[in-house]
Image (cartoon, rainbow, N blue to C red; front, top):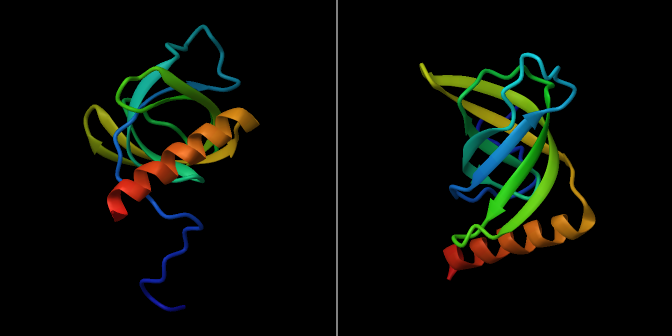
Length: 122
């Protein structure tokens, strides 16, 4: 295997977005959902998210992603926790793969990501 080969399908964009998440299938008696995290990078296929709680690999999340500075445009998605690293006593870096998104939201999300990438390139 060649070292340093990029395996991602989509380019990543360093962007801090507010993302609310709720663990799917989680019993409400122990739940304090929804929780809020901040993205540290995004792509059309996934999000690196800073979260306040430990999440197991394979955990399914319901995501509400706030797009843009005006925080008026929301998109909804379903994602799966693929990995997580503890970065402090109160914060985890969490890789979430987007598994599903309503088609209207997917169009808005893709347009937003591509628009942000265009700003970086120009």
